[in-house]
Image (cartoon, rainbow, N blue to C red; front, side):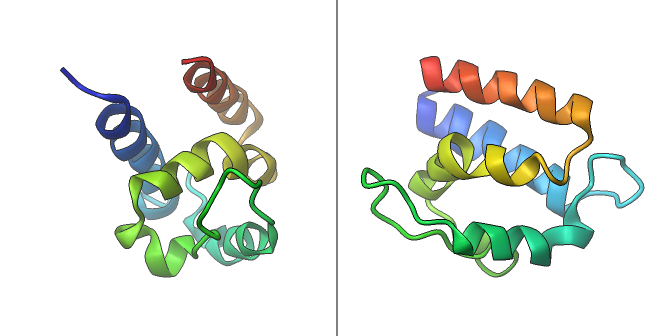
Length: 104
């Protein structure tokens, strides 16, 4: 069976981030050209008390992120940041994913 960590965090979340930041720049959901701005917003956020790691740069450290960092990105950091960068319909669909994972 596929567990939460491997399926949702290291699978879906990591895959979406790769599409957004490392895929074909002609795709309308591509945000890699705004990665510096996204990193600035991410590093300026203060994590909630139940998050024990401070956020690390996506550009410099995403390949070394742990599952807990993907969890923090998915559930706490991504929605307030990506609303400024994703097309509206993509963002709205992503909010449904985040809500569903949060309910689980």
